[in-house]
Image 1 (cartoon, rainbow, N blue to C red):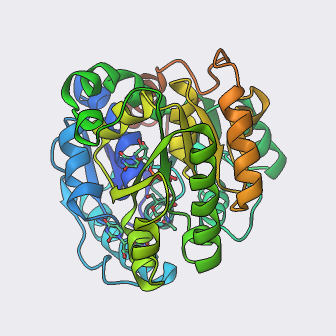
Image 2 (cartoon, rainbow, N blue to C red):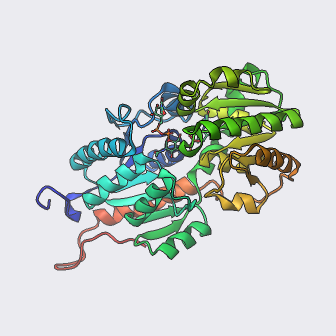
Image 3 (tube, helix red, strand yellow):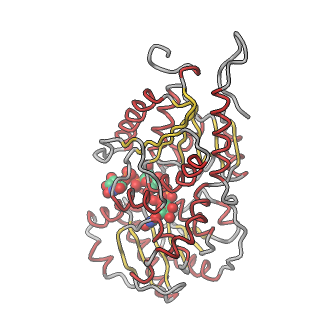
Length: 396
Ligand code: UD1
Ligand code: UDP
């Protein structure tokens, strides 16, 4: 080890570390972990506990039939700033990596958890693999956009959803190897649909009839931390639901519930026509609700993709999206938080043909990521090529 600050290649062991921490990251890595287990690939999972409420965390491990993580960090929930959160996770992950010394560390998506994980591994000279690399909203207000750019530039292996991600990465001149694999969110969604339909009684619980309701999710800080944006978006969704004669079920992220409370909007939202607000639901309930909805209103990245996969028309409550292919194929309409735009977009979404092509891979992303990880581990096990030869890990 170099002065206890970073590893040499020969210090590392042939196993893979995985960072999860937020709801969409648990979904994304579920098929990957299942595939690692099937192949008996040595691995361990670090949960940063960025998300920690049972309906944002434990419920997902149950629904996705995942074993408990090997490590769970403490102290992140108390942090109130991006820097504070990232710093605690960076130190916590580093401590574990110093002990385990994996030859590859996987992070997925754009949350602070992934920035912390990628930085911790990079600084120790552990190879970093970024799942869902190359996505860009080009909206520099978003913390996620900063995270994506930094993670992609310090990753050795970039697992990309589609050709568009490759173009973004090439334009920016990233160093790592790029692999187009699709998105494991697709794998998870396709693999769990039957189970969700069999197990979830969410439609009955909330008194909903198939295709007679819309699902709403909102949690982006640009939207929900601003009183006016939050209120205007909700007004727009409620007006659209009245015109289209739909009910709206709003499983609200804890951040959004907190903001509604702080802004004194809870009584107002309770009286908003057609909108029923509930706490965020688990993965199987959400999948069942989404698959049978007529429309989706959302500012979520994952939900935009899932709506497209299950052929439910989507209205995105943002001015931009990473998933621009959903716009091109007519599966998604951008509406921001403006009530008039939301109304117009909802009509357009409702009228759309649902026979669009599916743009996020064929549900084999996890298998491809596992196969590439297996090769990285195998190369790491191989003896050095010869005296004086570079032992730095490079796989193509
Ligand atoms: C984070 C990610 C975002 C991702 C989202 C997925 C960053 C910068 N943001 O946003 O990219 O789309 O997760 O949902 O990493 N809270 C709870 N219980 C929980 C989790 C959060 O009560 O289990 C509340 C807390 O008050 C917390 C607030 O929600 O302060 C925000 O949580 P945080 O993880 O900071 O950001 P998200 O909005 O969840
Ligand atoms: N989701 C869920 N329950 C909910 C809302 C969302 O299970 O009440 C799932 C959804 O199916 C998707 C993921 O959470 O897989 C998306 O997470 P989120 O919207 O929080 O984050 P983003 O994708 O925007 O980063």
